[in-house]
Amino acid sequence: MKTAIYPGSFDPVTLGHINIIKRAAAAFDKVIVCVMVNSKKNGGLFTPEERIELLRKSIHVDNVEFDVSYGLVAEYAKKKDARVLVKGLRAVSDYEQEVQMAMVNSKLNPDLDTVFFPSSEKYTYLSSSVAKELARYHANLSEFLPREILEDVKKKLEIRSDECDGKQS
Image 1 (spheres, rainbow, N blue to C red):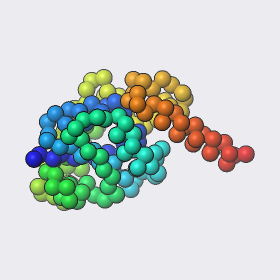
Image 2 (image 1 turned 30 degrees about the horizontal axis):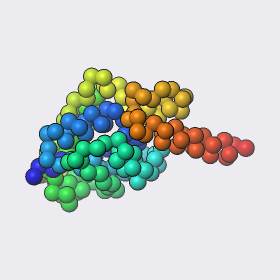
Image 3 (image 1 turned 180 degrees about the vertical axis):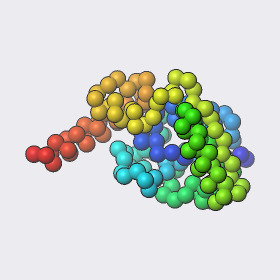
């Protein structure tokens, strides 16, 4: 069985992520969507567990599983007997960084290959950061995020806004 891992922060999952997940699910026997807790990013809007729940609400594909990892993706892949990482590419700038990471991962785990899925044209501009910024300004997010999680994102931002307002008082 060919198992692929699609690692990312997914904070929150976007329609671009969903597109890559569905395409990977068609290409591999099993896809593990793994919320990676990034040591370079402080906190996040959602906890890793909340991100998993948002992914579960958004994706209903039989051969897709969800998990969280706090370590290196190359080591995680060994534990899961996965030999492929799936990475989405939006732009040329993504390519340079992702190729560098693919080379590092193959040094750490020589059996691990990285497969790049170019973003669908309508999602090339889309990132979780863009979606969060738009949400902060109460923009319509229906073209950015799965409809199943729109209220979750709005509610989380309201809570964060209330917390910030309370600290300033």
